[in-house]
Image (cartoon, rainbow, N blue to C red; front, side, top):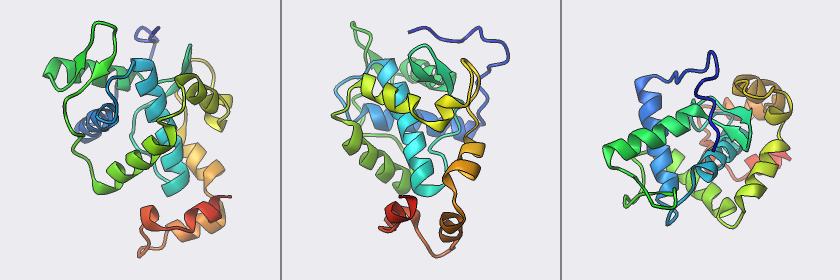
Length: 186
């Protein structure tokens, strides 16, 4: 897979907590499969970014994604895979696929739940279908090749209608357990 490692101005820029969480999210995805190519890991995390934003008004990670050769790409996800391999928490098979023997990542129950739900939704989708869905998003259509996608604008201006914003701002509401959130989003 072609990577933009030499792209000017694109540096892995996550604080320590966000970096650790991205690695745990990566392990959580890998734990649900026998093995995955990096392209699919990238697309699954991006797809869950979109679905998490729609479902909760927040992001799954703070990784930077950009439109790239084979759909959305994040240098941080690539670096997370490399570091997890160096740590021995995942392995790279002879065919280039990543795998883990771990049962999952160390995540909040909310993020674990969201990833499980999105896994159920995506496990039968091909990687090409994930790429096509990504290319249908506002984020893909509004950012240039190798330009960082602005999730904050996407969430604030595209996803968050006034009705949904009011609902999500209720301090007693848990967005993961709210069965009406789907109705509000349609």
